[in-house]
Image 1 (cartoon, rainbow, N blue to C red):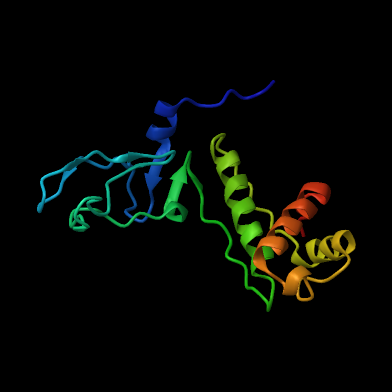
Image 2 (image 1 turned 90 degrees about the vertical axis):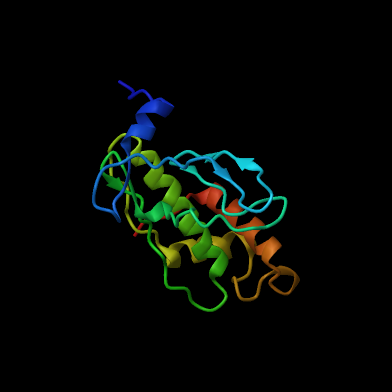
Length: 165
């Protein structure tokens, strides 16, 4: 049968910052701006509640905030560290799409304690793109403007899927 999705409390308990090599919940705390005194509760996010980085009224930085990276987290003992692809000229949209899809896939698997990390195939995806659109990424429409390339890449991915190696 289907595995039920965990609730927010179960997800919060499963989040670990493995850069510190110990299990702890990632919860930001309230911050009061030292210049104007305005209070800022942490922003609630899927993986962690993050403190405000700076005051929205006077732009004073929160000196107590911390650096947090999603790719350094474990969810149900599964790393979210997604692959950074080596880009070739004119293919940044393709590899940005791969990075987003890889992170979404890892999050989906991690919610159930599964590792999903098969590498994507850039060469196959480029062939799909050229077949669907009638030109290469470098030739691109409107002189290769990013908006059209991105839209065409998403349409190609929707029609053919994202191929694995």
